[in-house]
Image 1: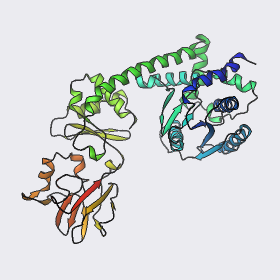
Image 2 (image 1 turned 45 degrees about the vertical axis):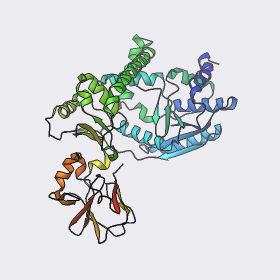
Image 3 (image 1 turned 90 degrees about the horizontal axis):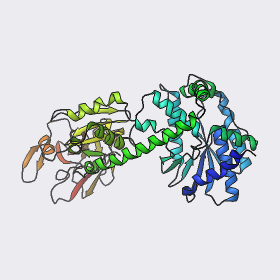
Image 4 (image 1 turned 180 degrees about the vertical axis):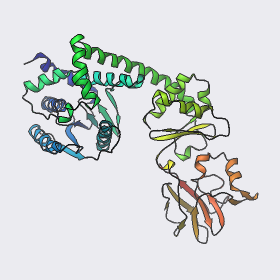
Length: 436
């Protein structure tokens, strides 16, 4: 038997040592060479070692007619190995990059499949890592992008692991031959309109002819960049520590940072800290689009700048940066009757409303600000609502979302705003749960 193939199980077992207490191990199983070898390795190791329960997940994109034959093939392989298989059908959204859309749909399916502390293994290897590094280098990626694929990262409620990043494609092929494995050859892998296929078929053969160790050295470079990114992440955490100070509007449930904490930092450290903070929430902008941050940061006092990103936007209000996404970017609409205040009222695109205590008499309705509202305040008479919100420093982006409780033409309360959410020492209070 090939010595490299013999060493592969021991190498894999060593890489998996920290994860042997996980409740379940899942394998992302496409049926291709790489994932077939990984699944076979784990199934064989399970015969001789005490390992977590093993399952396989096949994501069916339906992008090619031949793909309909892949789930039955994967089922046959899993049956032979005694591994349960789950097939998940996904819809790939149309967009500029079919590769990216398919990848996003696939990982979204994986994330939804993982329970608490469960682990998903994917079969990317050293050659994939080198290709990723070169691909991102050609796109002008920064340090985060050039660190290529991390060995592990959070995914859903669990963890994604890539235990084969120190294994070459040749080692996997040798193992497959030694064990007589059968796998799927995806015809799209030959289509050079996809950039990665072009790199794999045209560029890397030429590189390897001149520099035979190119794949190994490029993968090593990616590891060095990952270490550098780790140091940048540590610096970002230090810079964000003060900026994450609590504020009076944490009840909105929105990520926010104190603006003043960034003023003393260099522009590079500002970008580094913001990138770290934004990374879990949105795809990050390339270097050409960071001008949006500078415009937001440098806008004159009293302005309400915003920086639109791929999955939401940053706004500046009350001396803080606020991240808004999802329902927060859709204006709530409606004039809703509240027939039974004993029951919570769902607000379209705006969370829900509840009334505690003894509800006020009369027919109640919930509306939103139109301008010019006046409210009776104990000890102060009638006051303009705009002034009352200014006094409390309510961020501008939240004001149009505040649920206003009316009885006829009388404004009784403003949901979520202390002092305006019910009569002082009164028998009831209006509680607003903002959208998540």
